[in-house]
Amino acid sequence: MEFGAGMLLKLLNRLKAPAADADPARLVTLAAAALLLEVSWADHDISEAELASIGAALRSTFGLTDADTDELLAQSRRDHEDSVGVFGYTRAINESWEEPAKFDLLVALWRLALADDDLNRREEQVIRKIADLLYLSHARFIEAKLRAKRND
Image 1: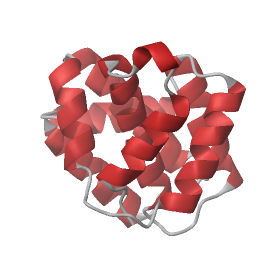
Image 2: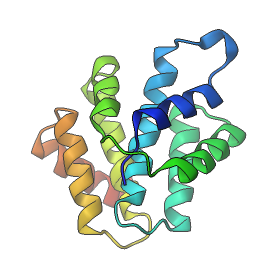
Image 3: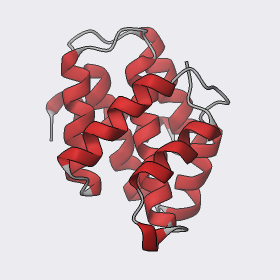
């Protein structure tokens, strides 16, 4: 199942600081988190290794606290059935990030898919779709996969 726009708004309302009502950086952070979660749900089996990988990526990449990360994951698991696709999330990222940051996100998506040592073809399809929507070439798609496998 993919995340809906209502899901992103719920997450934004829960995590944003009162003074940051329209903080575009926070919106992009949540969009990236939603894409990570989308990959984890692609095979309809969320492993503990995948959840740990998502949490680590959110904390290190976006500077979320443990509490914010836990809240984001808990709310996301409750609301993941709202679905309108990933386009809104990739659009938010495309409007804010340059290619190197989008590539880093792609590497994180691959690390997540490989976290449970069971790459499902659906996970790979979701990552390919996201890469296409982020305007990343096939060569960058493969490079990100190789980097994630090497864990650099």
